[in-house]
Image (cartoon, rainbow, N blue to C red; front, side, top):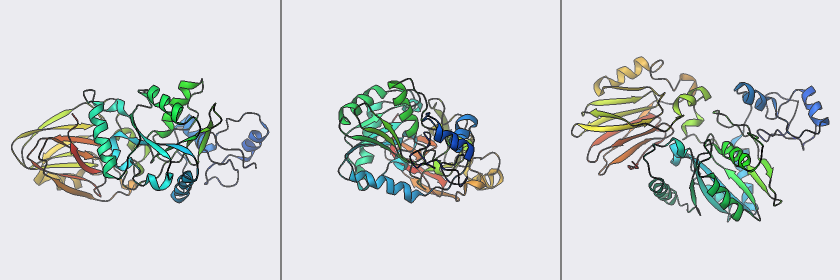
Length: 369
């Protein structure tokens, strides 16, 4: 077996010894690949993912991924931290400076096409810069893009061409932020190649770094997604993510609530109106996600009765803990954040309590809409 031969989809070294490890290819297929002039070879996992949308579990080591990222600090590079607009705080790598040393880095925020159409990009950028600064980060630039729709990619590509002229460009991020989809879109806009890197709704599709040669002699490098326990995507299955992640721009749904009423966002979020006048609360979640209103006094009973049917996801297999709540008393119109699920716009001077499994992804910001 040649250690030079890697899967073009996930970056793993191809091997025929262990089906449970990354890069596995049956012996006959591997021998054929070794004697072929075709460099576009996919491991069995990527092949089945691309053609049948089936995920084959492999042994993954997050420590190996982190070690790979740590090596960037020893190189001259431009680092692109790709984050998810719908889970910005938890997909932001707050320790990125430790990984990249003195290298320049930018934030590329993906999935902007799915945000409500009446939102202003300048307002979104201001909030993100504040969040980055709050984490001690000062990215050189922030780009709002859509990898799927190729929105704003021309500006990003022009920046990368200028700043990455004499260095490699590393794309880093947590799992399922659309990093590989973004790189595929960039490649597609510059060549006739399509979907070179394997992508899917399943977290952790890229298993090793993938080097894509550039015309200037340097590389565009895709790195494995970091698994973050505080990121909802790392807990849900691909089928569940199909329900949770929006496919079209979020449409507002406004509920007039009285204190003592509760909204469930499937089993992934609960929102109690605790105190205040009769008020409108606007929910922004994927259209396929089940939303239910009930009395707060009945909420616990309703949850226990329906957590395995109406309130899916999550399922028992996701190993998520019980719902944990946090009370918010906004003094201005605010968004209560359910990271990876959506948000609820809340009026000023009310008291609400929001819950997610184990409190994952809860937060608040000044209303963006």
